[in-house]
Image 1 (spheres, rainbow, N blue to C red):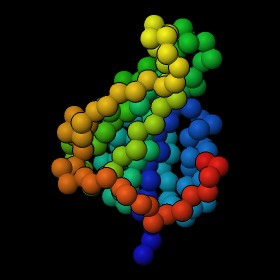
Image 2: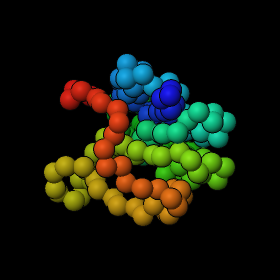
Image 3: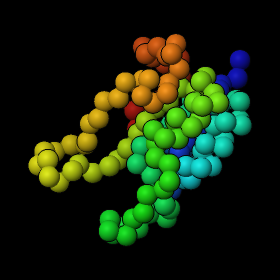
Image 4: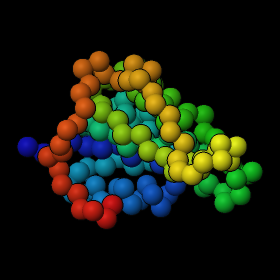
Length: 140
C-alpha cells in the first residue's frame, strides 16, 4: 500500500523545504507551497492528499525580517482548511505556527489557542491519532 500524499503550506521557505525534505525521506509524496490560494487549489484537486501540514499565520512571501513590513495573505491557515473542506472532508490537518507571543501578555512561550473541530470545518468522523504507523527520527 502506498503512503498518502501530504499538502505542506508554510510561508517560510526554509521550514517548508525542511518539512518537505523529511516527509519525502519518509516516503511520502508532497505538494508544498508558500501560497494559501495555491494550497486551496491543490487541496481541492489532488485527491491523493490525505494529510495537510498548515501554517496558521501566513505572510506574503518572501517574508521580510522587519515585522512592520510584513503583509498577511488573504487566506490564513484556518481559512485554507475551511475552503478545502467545502469540497473535501477526507483530509486530516496538522496546524503549525512559529508566531511570536503577544508582547502585551508578558509570558514566555507560544500563543495557544484552542479551537473545536467544527469551527475549522473538520470531518465529523475525525478521531485523535493515538500512534502513527510512520516512524520519524527525533531531529525533525
